[in-house]
Amino acid sequence: MNIIDIKNLNFKYKEKEVFNNFNLQLENGSFTTIIGLNGSGKSTLIKILLGLLKYEGIIKIDDILLNKDNIKNIRKSIGIVFENPDNQFVAETVMDDIAFSLENLQMNSKNIKEKIMKMANYIGISRLLEREPHSLSGGEKQLVALASALIHEPKILILDEALTMVDIRVRKQVYSILNDINKNKEVTIINVTHDMDELLYGNDIVLIDKGNLILKGPKEKVLLEEKVFNKLNLDLPFMVSLSIKLKYYGLIDHLIFDMNEMVNTIWK
Image (cartoon, rainbow, N blue to C red; front, top):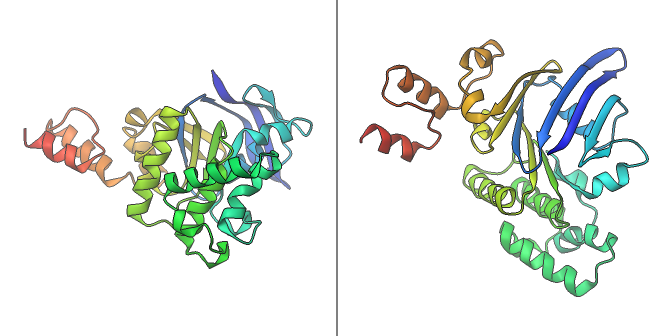
């Protein structure tokens, strides 16, 4: 079943055409990375899905038609983390900020606190709960924004350049969490990024250029399209480039994304 179904999407910024009969379907429970150069239409697509921009065409999210009458219900199913988390903070402390969406659902205070403590431990931000959001580092802010996005248990989690300020060590930890909620809680994840290394973490890849769908499919298949990425001046992740070279010389027979697995395979 498709949780997002986009048919014949048309959109313009003033006179500049961004999408012309754009079509895209994402399956329920998928973990998709959307990649493309600046100006390719990635962020515009996310704004459309959130009901922030008026469009022409047909878009269904969780089998609900995206329009002004349904957008409130649709947003209940979506968690969103933007590149700049400062725009998402609404309270004086991290605890109160995470609690905000639960209070809107009229959950009682005891259950709210229990859910927040569980989420904070899960994300690894328990030590930050009494801090003011604007006193945090960039990476800490993005982790708090992630906790706020997940606290109401959305069906869809959208990350719009959401981990740019998180260091590599913490980023791997976050992707472990994302893979867990994707597999065990069946949360559909859409990760919009310009960081090519993030292509390694999801299951599927969507490549967009100038509002056109160029490639879509499992990462193991899409990342073999080296010529397409080169044509768009997109550098493949190091492990993918290495795999393609070794595969060409017959040293391995498939793409390998993990360095330890690569070493073990070569030295067998």
